[in-house]
Length: 107
Image (cartoon, rainbow, N blue to C red; front, side, top):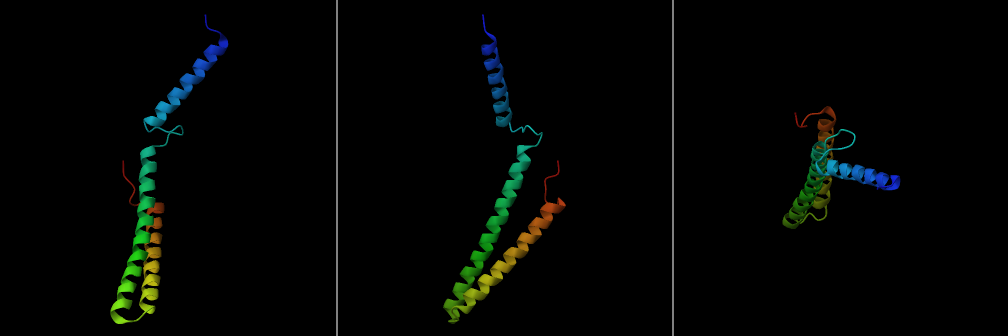
């Protein structure tokens, strides 16, 4: 009927299928939850986007101030630096919240 080599191949195939099904259903081999990982990734993307948006807001506001008041380039430089400082402050707050467990989903 079937040889030992064929049985070994079928067993290996069955193991690969079960691993693929576990990945597809969101389970991880180490018992972790992929949904928690997704939430963490979304939080990191949000922090990065907020950082970029704050710096760009400083850039846009500085450009507007320079254009309206003829203070080029000092309004732009000052407000970009201020935007960067605010973005760094927000980053520190976000890291503190994440490390203390605040803002994480309670299940």
